[in-house]
Image (cartoon, rainbow, N blue to C red; front, top):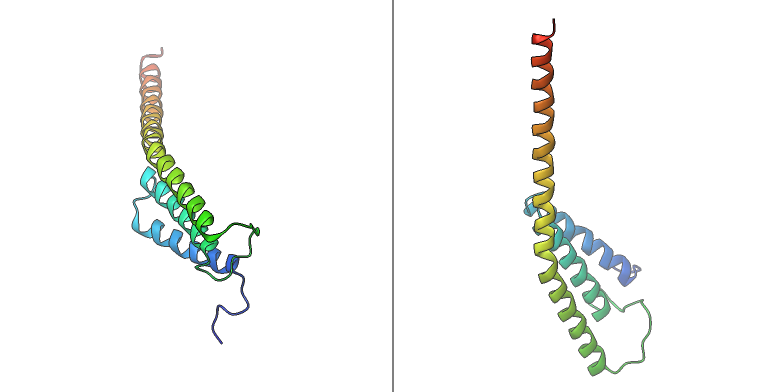
Length: 125
């Protein structure tokens, strides 16, 4: 009896996604837009594979679509996701750059205040 018997396709898909996300965290540089993008892409692929039945019979909503229509809709959804990813990656990079700049500005501000307090302490009568 395999480990997969008795588990729903959703449970199998969630377990698979957890493994993929852990691998991405191990392989990608932390705190980058690339890791966030890779995780979003992995989640999208996992959902697609679950709906296509890669993890067993899909337990989701039952649609009355013929296979050709279903495949076409999935392909269009994938195109939409790919386009969104292309547009989102530069935004994520810009946000990460803003975060780095803010951290630098805060650090410089703290150092400036500390130097100012030291100077004030030295010249105070």
